[in-house]
Amino acid sequence: MKQFVVIGLGRFGMNLAAALAEAGHEVLVIDEDKKKIEAIKEKVTHAVVADATDKQVISEFVTADVDTVVVGVNESMEASTLATLYLKEMGVKEVIVKATSDDHAKILKALGATEIIYPEKDVALRLAERLSTPNLIEHLPLTPEYSIVEITPPEDFLGKTLRSLELRKEYGIVVIAVKDMLTNTFHLIPGGEYEIRADTALIIIGKKSDIEKLDV
Image (cartoon, rainbow, N blue to C red; front, side, top):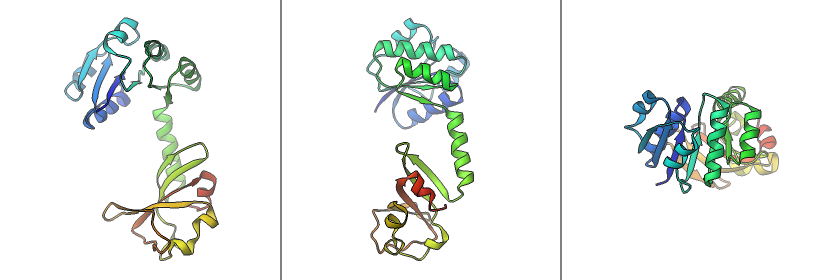
């Protein structure tokens, strides 16, 4: 069980805190809005009505040994910036912050934020990617250059074996698993004689530029 702190209970913070608690972790939430705290207090470990831009409040409720603090304050750039500053001064190692703009992100990085997130922007980009690439099921970026993606097999792959497709040679990609869509089970590291079926999905790894050559 890990210890998490979620500061700011907008829709993002609410959903994140509830999901972490449901996964069995210890979760402390902090927000100035009493109604929001009342709405979530039964779902998390601790729920506190407090101003997270107050350094004394931060030091009273948050300890440096928590696994991760997520700052999802929506109201102002100043509020999340101050909270991030105080958390880093306390020695919290993992501080993930919701940014409102690119300039805000630069400030947060300068303060030592571990990770910057743009929930609305990220959702929009993922939707745009899915709409423009219909066969794409899921996408996990590993580095700016490499990704793991789950795709439905192109029609000309069906009935063929992995060996005959020569995906590494033709496209520079590797199939690391095949998912049976009917039973939701996985066949890990399939051999060359594995025959592609219409009711499966391919989990592949490779350079983004090479994956795009699949025309999925």
